[in-house]
Every structure is written in structure tokens, then in C-alpha cells.
Length: 466
Image (tube, rainbow, N blue to C red):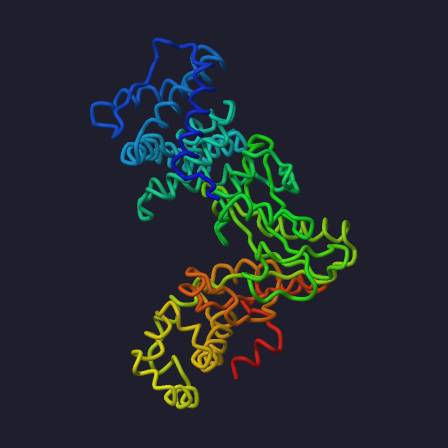
């Protein structure tokens, strides 16, 4: 059964809802903003003037909201080319004025006698706040305005050149603003179930980024009594999950995602479970990248599960290793295998398949039991090395590993052929990993990783590297 939900129709629905709501508060009929989809040069100056009128605030709050709504409507009608030009105009023409900054800095460094220094400090804080950000903040007062800003930042991250200094500064300002609005203290943790409104469940299907939800039946299976799904919501975005986690209640560690998601598997009595497996964590809003509340989600869910099911003693993930094959491709032939491993594999005449690298590119290599068993040991060794020792800027090279290690988990177990989906084979040669959240070690593990980048790992994982 198809979900019939695509990125295109979800976006179309969002645009329609925003435009419909905002049109209801547009009282300035003579102040329309008509822009071509590509935002041609002829439309730049009228747009710039409208942006200035939004900042001037003439006519009071009602008029200001109407101008902001018209500006938002105009943005939503642009294509990607037009949106990037819109954002560049906002960043370049409505950024921080360095002339004012220099003048204020001079007064602060060499203040005339009787100068009100606290007042100068406040003026400096105001001057460092770009007008473009002040303009964007006006959307906060509009219905669905917060969602609009989150999506606008997603556009910026998707379209902008990362080396563009003005857009980079605007992004940082907007991210800091969203971080203050989306502080974890403002968020609601909600358990989702089959009785959750259909439009929210539909978004779970659309947003799921780890293990695609294939159908409504698949989703229903993930919401059964031996499963849990929790999400953070913001009061200003009540129908939009910000981040959600899917949990399986099982006996002992799970080491195979296909078995865990098998729709034909019998239901387990959740009262008999002793382990909670976090098998998917998805950031649903791209515009909130870097805002960071995933660690709070896991810890809140652990606390809720402990209260509901005191029989649950073990909290672990079953996680992908998304960067493993990319890293493996960068290793030299000399670093790929030990002499002993090379000798063992030579007996299988892997050269007939183009060697280990070419063998791993075949979609069906795991179906050859002899070949899979021969490759297992070197791949498990390399997987352990990648997760525990490979770093980038003092953090684990693998993004999922960095997330869980920074949260205080440890690398507990690497699972062979745990995800034989096309994606799993392509990204990690089918391997998955259990990160264990041992409650009395979370804080010390986090501090060790934060200060030294040392990844805690079980004896089994450490032995795999020998």
C-alpha cells in the first residue's frame, strides 16, 4: 500500500495553508508585492523598498503584520533561483553596518568624560543585530510564521554557497534566534500512537530518514503495543514534529533491523521486555539543523520509559554506520587488510571478482555464505576502528557515532549483516552498531568524550580490532 505522500504535495499543502491564512490578515490592498518566480532585476528595487517599509513599522502593529505577510507570500511564490536572490538581498543590504560598529567601538574604547557606558553597550548590541534579522522576526507574530522561518532557513542551507560571508552571517543570526525560541524548556514531549491525528502520522512517514516507512501497515506495526514513538513539538508548530525517536521493547540487545521491523513477527508482551532499542532518530525540520535537542529527547524518553516500565533495565540503540563505506574507499590497499587477512581471502580467489573493494560493491555478495563469513572478520575489525578511532576535528568521523558518544553512550556491539537493505549494504556493508546508554556512566562518558574525544567501547568491540 502506497503512502501517496511526496515531498512535492506536502510542500504544496504547506504553501497553500500559509498563503490562505496570511491572505486573511492582508488589509493593505495597495501594497502588494508582485515578483517574478526568478526574482528578475526589475523586481529587486520594489522588493528592497517593501523590506524597508516592513522595518519602518508605519501604521502600527496591524499594518506591520500585513506587510510581513505580503512579504512572506511573495517569497513563497519564488522558485529556488528567486529565493536565493531574495536571501542574498536580505543578507547584503540588511546586514550589520560596520560604520556604526566602528564609531561605537571608538566611543567605548575612548569614552568622552561623562559618557553613559551602559547605554553605549546597549547601542552596540542593537547595532550588531542585523536589520535583516529584525525583519524576519516580524514573522513570529503571524500564524505559522515560526514554521515559515524554519523552512526559510532550510532553503538557505540548501541553496546558499557556504563560502558566502553575508549569507553565512545571516544564517548564524537566524540559527541563534531559533535556538532561543526552541530551547528544550519550551518543547512538549508527546508519545505518538495509531490514534494520533492522521496529518501528523503522515508527516512521520514523510520525514523518516533512517529506515523508510514503506506503507501505512508498516507505520502501524511501528506503533504497536511493543513499540513506542516519541516526538518533540513546539507550541507554535503544534502539528509539526521537530525530532522523533522510534523504540522497540525487546528481550536483550537486537542485532538485525529487518527482524526488528518484521510486520509478520508476533507481538511481544511489553511487560516482559527488559531492553529498549532506539532504532531510529530523525530530525524532521532541516531548518533546525545545529539547534540541537536530540540528546534531550533520548534522556527524556529514557526517563519516561523507566517510569512506565520499570522492568526495562537496558537502553540501547540499533544504529546505522552511514560513513563507513566512504571511509573505506579512501583507505589504501596496504591499510585495507592485514597480511593474515589477505592470505585467508586469497584462498577464495577474490581477485576473480576484482578484489575486496569490487566484491563489496556487488549487491548480492552477502548471499554467498562462505564469502560473507570470510569477509566478516576484517570488516568487523575495520568497523570497530572506524567507530572508535577515526576522528574529524577532534570528534568521531561518523556523524551518528559522534551524536551518541557525545550523549554519553558507549560502542557496545557491532552487528554483522544487520541491515541488508540496499542502503545498508551501500553505506556500511550491512553492519549496524549498538550504542549502550548505561545510566550510571552517561555523564562520565560524555565528559571524557567532550574533553578528550575518547570513545568508550566494550571489550568485545576493542577485541575486534586485534
